[in-house]
Length: 112
Image 1 (cartoon, rainbow, N blue to C red):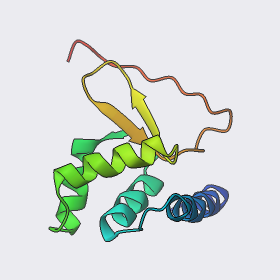
Image 2: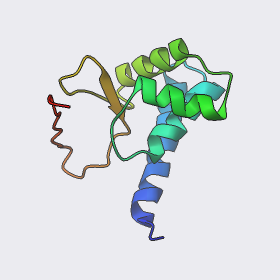
Image 3: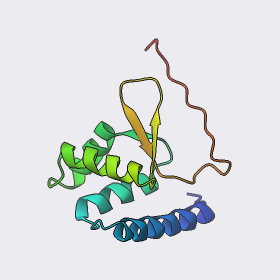
Image 4: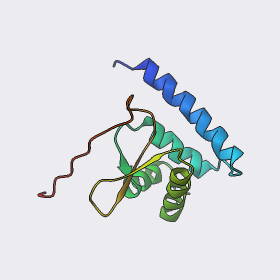
């Protein structure tokens, strides 16, 4: 398997910065927030709250859907993650900085 070490190092650096920013804004790094951060930092595609909850629930029975929504809202409001609305009734979230020019195009199939 080939790894993009520059991208991995960049994500880890951004993750440390994210944790610092969270603490500087008076928020604790709870186990659930850390799990959401870890999950998003490894994803390359936007994920919605339901997807994030299902994936985390497989590993940790101590996380609730409301916690996922509140954490995603908090992180989005602090500009630590990107919230993307792409035409459905769900918001999608992604870890910032993956796109060098900070643009992306998302297509939604309305036929399936």
